[in-house]
Length: 480
Image 1: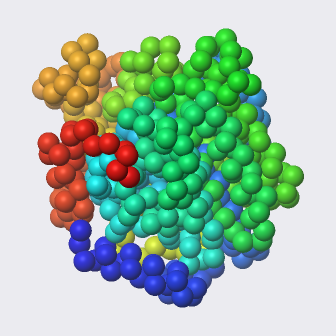
Image 2: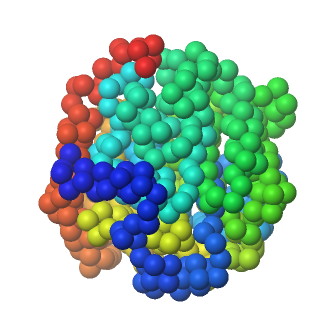
């Protein structure tokens, strides 16, 4: 871990403890260039609240707004009617932990070092030098809570309370692990947890927090455990969906979203709160009926085809985000950090390279920023998107074996080029007809890899993930 990053983190800690305003941040009216909507909001209103709800392994096609014929999601549909749906929105990775690190730091996993999933009992986690959104908001007066699945390190020093959050209730790792225990802060409440109660209890905890929030601005991060396998739902939702248990799990999450939105309305907080709903990656199709649907997209969780990383996105903010908008703007969970930080009144220091952008112009005024999306699997850049074009350097062939089988990753003689607006299912390779576009995307990929190599951030954790140490799953969660 570099001294530069350690120093930046220590600076945040010192300032937060002293309760001072940081020179690291700009004044309210000198925010990220080119975002006049943000500046106007900040001049007229108090800092907004943020609620980010993230499902686990929910596919792009697993809700009513995407046309699913048997999963009923009236609350998500209503949220979309009251706000905006982005149809070209991406997770930070096709895997759980890497995507979550991207969501709360605004940085691709190749920067944070979180290349794969953390397993219970491992003595590591997301590097403490990484600045989370919770940490960045703290010196601006925000209270941050994480209610749900953490999955960025389960030992004491890497838990949410050491990563900027003021409160945590939920699981520290994935629910299919050795023992998916339920925690409140650093106290283990259940060993193992009763998974059928998790969605309901997360919702109750979130509502209790909202009821007690008062006038202090807040960041509520609600990463659900479901619909990750093993699936489980409360008694009230067992058997309600024609889609089976998977549909039950989605419909209970939909109920949860309705409860959160209803609470914000009841408390008079909706017009001062940006609410976002998304998923951490695509569906786990190999789980059969226990897995979800990527809609018309090719691929699934663990793959860099669109189905592995294109996910649902809905945002609601009455009075700021126009209602009933469906947009083709390209967005990413990487954008949550810079968007929320700008709205809160700050800009991160220049020595913290971000991969996300301020998404508010896309949410409020129809902007469609031209930007690159990098599709990594572990440390390998598998594909890059720029504009409507996506170039695949290699891909996964499920007919050969799972993604853990080296032979199942195919490197074609030349990269594959797809026009994602005309061919979102990635069926027709247009590389031969468009050599100039291929060359442009190859350069974008090379330039990015050069930057990553030059900075070489979090090398120790990346080497650990790529070594035999990561695959040792023998450690027991009883040691936590």
